[in-house]
Image 1 (tube, rainbow, N blue to C red):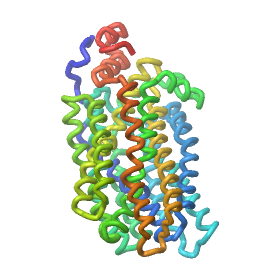
Image 2 (tube, one colour):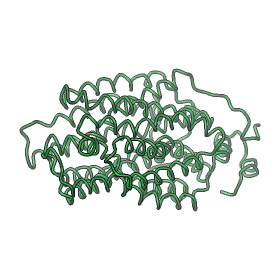
Image 3 (cartoon, rainbow, N blue to C red):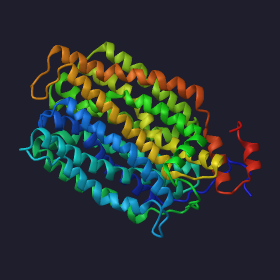
Image 4 (cartoon, rainbow, N blue to C red):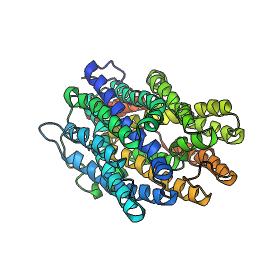
Amino acid sequence: MQTQANSKLAYHTSLLERGSYGLYFIGQNIVYVLVSQYLMMYYTDYKFMTPAAVGVILLLARVWDAVNDPLFGVIVDKTNMKSGKFKPWIRISTIGVPLALIAVFAMPDGLTGAAQISYACVTYLLYDTLYTICDVPIFALATIMTTNIKERTLIIGIGRMAAAFSMLALSVAVMPIILAAGWLTAAALFAIVAFALILPINIFAKERFRADIGDAGTSLKDIASYLKGNKYLLIFYVSMIVCSMTNTSMSMNSYIGKYMLGGPQMIPAVMITMTLPMIVDSFLIPIINSKVGKFQILIVGLSIQLLFSAIGFFAGYTSVPVFLIINTLRNFGFGAFFAMSGMFAADCVEYGNYKTGKRAEGITFSIQTFASKLTSAFSAGIIGTLMATIGYNGALPQQGPQTMDGLWKMYMLIPILGLAIAIPVLLAFYKLRDKDVQIMALFNQKHITREDAQSQLSREY
């Protein structure tokens, strides 16, 4: 029987599996970036919907997420089909998500008023539901492909790095393709590419360590009970919700490029300052994590984001080179969170299993996607409300001084608020560390006894 958590553990996955996991995230991220970074501008500047209406639509969609993400997590945890626990859902989304992407950007030109809003609501809700079906299982899949924590970190890191590379490519390609081909044709082209990249994981990935279902996740009441028994999952995502909810920058990159840096042709430059740091972070973090714990890396990253948001606000946007440099440095901090959120969720799966005896991957990762969508919803609602307040009008070729000043504050200043809350909360209350998670994983897979685990843990959990 193995008694030391730092003993060398064999890798279980093949190169094809890890590669297909990365390809999946490239395909998924094509869809995600097109919607998260460009849909709001499509609505406001090309379909001429009011920012307030767009904010309400996005907010309502996320209210639906408050229901469908946890419910889907329950369904996933109670489903263990012969063909797999997570892969059947991935197969559905392989076709469904690309089709939903096309539908979102296929709004007929003649629609106005209530008809326009109704079309946007229906298609966005359809997309949102199908995206849930693709997002929860793919993160949870990594927890049963291998029981080696370092290998799991590598797999999730590959996914994040692949997503970051795709974001860099999309930063350069999306707006030129849209300007050349139009919104609908561009969406159709990206949907086809996404389908081709998502498909391989259905063929190569293997579910090796499926646990017994037990009684985990039978109802929404069980979700509350699971959260009560998994305090670190709750602490981590409450902190991230507060931090991400005020991250208004993510949805405003295209507006900054168009109105503050010289026109739509500058949008790729702004997007690159966001995606390039994510690629570097996604590549470096698994390497750094072999020497430094994930928690320390995360805190440093969030602190960097806070520092350079403040510097960027006071530096302004009159100098394009200065803006691009500061924004790149700022996004090295955000890239750390982007690359690591799934890794922390996987750790919380092990902790929850160790504490409660329930291995609720579906619930855990549905909370991750729910938190991400909920925060982006409130962020979109905040953006829509503030843009209406400062007098933004997408039909105008240029915004007035008051509107420009308001857009800049939304881009640089508001994110500081959430970071200033999240960092102290994590430092004070999140005590789960990498070495202890590996010990818990060994116990959960019955490689060591609970007595052995307790004797090796750095603290009492």
